Image (cartoon, rainbow, N blue to C red):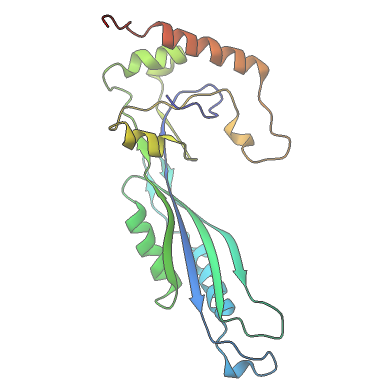
Length: 215
């Protein structure tokens, strides 16, 4: 179980995460003679607009749409120089059937051959079968009635991306009292009542675990 904000709902996984760095290289020149250079900023800005405006990202039946966000853009030293290098970083949320390799290929096509791509973060998505052995019982202990509800998968990623692989691929439940709609907003808060309810749910789950015997 991974304790992340879910509003005390049982969430059975989430999208994968890919953070590519895109780099354009040009030729520096004086700002009064731009024709002597090659503007890396302009080349990458055009690529950023193509990526931002693309609307054909795949949609998963369980995890929803893949998304791509142009998060940062850096270029130039001062106005009277043609920038010879530009860099942007993207946040890609992958889904089943559209993993990191497919995302890199699609972004590369949109950017063009002159733009270099490097993977800075590449974490897989997580998907647990609600009917996996023992899972209905776990879901009921955490949130009574949730075992019969449609499974939810989060848009954000959690430590489960790393922990599940290190622990041999166990089933994963994400559960916690925070409100995911408030993530990274000003004055983020958490309901005190939900904190108490989450503590009670965790106690039920731990108390129901079989006790080990022997040395």
